[in-house]
Length: 117
Image 1 (cartoon, rainbow, N blue to C red):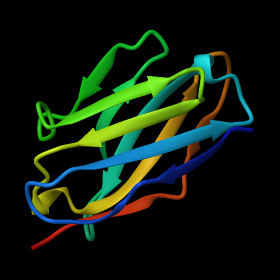
Image 2: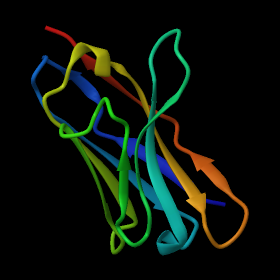
Image 3: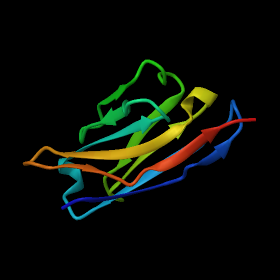
Image 4: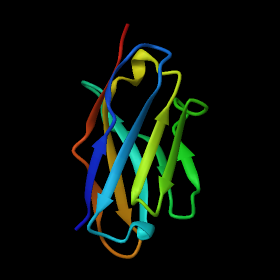
């Protein structure tokens, strides 16, 4: 069983930056494809960015050029650097892990990001 703990959310002004972290435990991190998703009030959860063990990344069009996902396999941690934040980025951000060595799709508890003046 993999546990995911997010941190780094908060309130930031438009144009500002935040870095989210997600620490994984209870599994082999290099077997996990990691991702960040977000859910705004009244909307469905949507993909923000993913990164596989090799480092290949994928981004939603709405965040390309502003957000960067990365992982540190030595620290069992995935990051989401968010720059040029917009009010529409306001949401609860969730860390996700998919086990590539067997069954298992895991979620963190979420961290709130609010972008407002």
